[in-house]
Image (cartoon, rainbow, N blue to C red; front, side):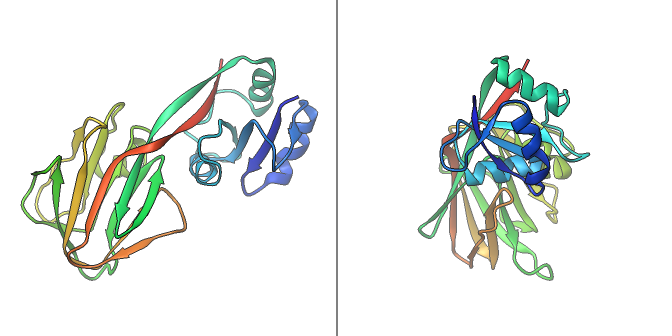
Length: 226
């Protein structure tokens, strides 16, 4: 029997289903994390249990990443071993002695919506733009490119790291780089907030702060049934 823990708002709803399919719920010793919800629940599950394989079960009308099967079918396939584990890159942000890792994206945003943020972007030591004025920047993984990044750029990508300039005053086209690039964002007029995915933790930075974003240390793991 496979041991699992559950992340989701309505965990009690899925508990009986898991037991019915022969899974053991154990919050201290588990092989898989059951992400019961939508795409946002998967991101939260990765925050709570980084690197542990996630089984996505749908409890939302919006779950683009969920497998195209019923929850019963997914559990039976996992139980029978009809799956593989897909590894997904993460991104790491470092600023003023703090680090956060995201599966989806890193966001730098103006703290006060009444005042635009001013910043410069450097890729591998080379300045890519003059000073940019706007609401901030979204740095996304391929997984995250179908979320906030896509709402800004109306596009997505399947490899690398993508930069989307959020509501900038001048036209600033989005950029996609290989995932070995190091991105540095210098705040020339703040304050700003920095956060990863939908994590509760946020870091506030002020004018002069330098934010470093690069490939993450770990990888997300998703169970893909077949």
